[in-house]
Image 1: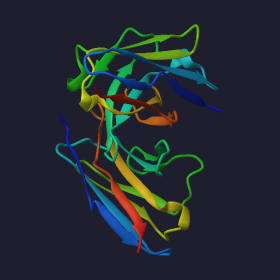
Image 2: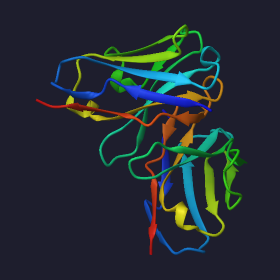
Image 3: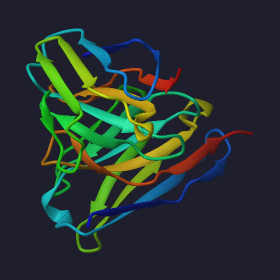
Amino acid sequence: DIQMSQSPSTLSASVGDRVTITCRASQSISSWLAWYQQKPGKAPKLLIYKASTLESGVPSRFSGSGSGTEFTLTISSLQPDDFGTYYCQQYSRYWTFGQGTKVEVK
Amino acid sequence: QVHLVESGGGVVQPGKSLRLTCAASGFTFRSYGMHWVRQAPGKGLEWVAIISYDGTNEYYVDSVKGRFTVSRDNSKNTMFLQMNNLKPEDTAVYYCAKDFKFRSYFDFWGQGSLVTVSS
């Protein structure tokens, strides 16, 4: 099984901050990685797929990078609507999510 | 636009059964793989099962193999999750999600249906 780990688990930030979340896979997944955003009580929303491709309609302040086993999600300038929990997901072999990173108000 | 609506959740005793339904609209349902994903209260996301576009292939997470069965009715744009021998650790919000193709990422999600397994 492919395990996914995210860091940090919680991130305190202010509006306008640059935010970076890291996701690591237990084995190489090439670029078969997606990022999702989830707000409390809501379904997850797709942000990025294939490690760095922005889903249609997602603001350009979101970006993804990486390949193999190390990936990052960056928010260039945090906006009020960006607070929530972010999950990485590998889809190289079946599907596994990271444990999540909660982005909260500093 | 794509719309996924789950139903059938509720409170059930350990060892009992429950069937969830996912009603889909806004896309050609018969052309896409579909998933079930669950989220225990206060916890992260866990993939549960996938069914291929034509229903001929199914895959499950180990913890539900032999207890859960995914199926679909393409004539009614509907997917099902039959859950048998439920355990307290199956308590979660269950989401249905559309695969981008088959065995890919999830581009649309339903709003979820809460299943509580408790005596």
